[in-house]
Image (cartoon, rainbow, N blue to C red; front, side):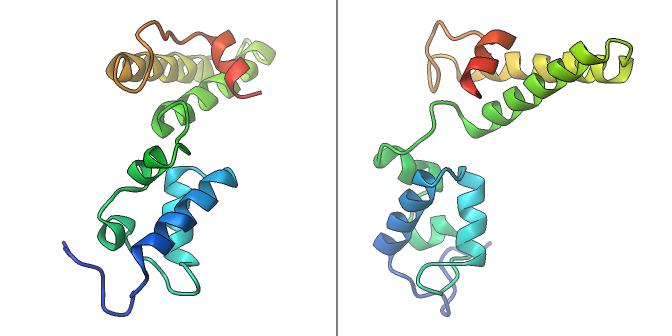
Length: 137
């Protein structure tokens, strides 16, 4: 694995950080920001790896600039999926396969909440369908 950015990608670290914050303010997630920087770049020059260009991860840049999401991205994605599955299962109670998928997804959400609790989440944070639905409306 490379430990320095390629020669053809000579962007300034401050420009990359500014672009990361700008994209976050437009509503992009950290993984989408990395993809956009790889594809579009900064001032026309692609950024193949934000960490090599700046020395910091996208999430670290967002935290420094108070632009980070309330929830970690992986937890947020799972909660959105659980809400969609719950709505589907409520409309289609006979759908056993998606009932099982909902059980598995909610189990993953609860395990991730336990993992992040106290560090990136409040100590009293608990997952419930109603709380998740409120977060994403």
